[in-house]
Image 1 (cartoon, chains in turn red, yellow):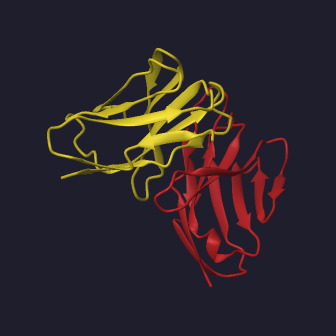
Image 2: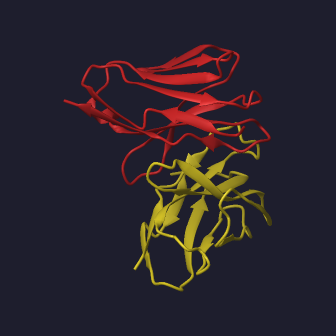
Image 3: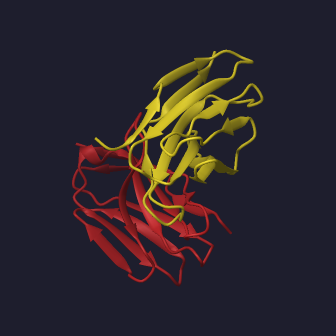
Length: 111
Length: 114
């Protein structure tokens, strides 16, 4: 029940494309859904996060869509750039239960 | 600059040796964490500490040990009991003990058994 399933495992798009990464969870008590971005050889950094009281959140070119009834959330990257090439992790938590990470998606944006 | 500092960046260990990975933060965060990252497996929690002098096992604590004698420091020892220690180790911290807040990560330590 603590699992977060992330797909796809890898994704290749052309510059300007809109990659979409999906995550699904089981624990309905989760109330915090962050996305982390990790460049090779570096630690992850928080990209954007959402709480279940909203269905969408945008920060620049990054958008989280949240579907509470389906227990799914996704990351969309508008006008993707080669500099967006990184590994993206979704995660979920409550105040009292540990942050559970998805398996990660390796995104490549070709010039 | 505030942040989390992990050292060393690269570490090589011989079979049967214990090694200690350093993690220091100057963010005044209460909670600190150690994660292990292997290709295709996401981040798995090894140990965490929500307050000084207290820590709990995560999902994969076997073969690891930690201490939390100071708020700023949370070293991880990889013991000889850890059968497959080659991995990328990440330390993180957050402002409070609740899990639903931003975690700040260090740059990681890549440990290789030789």
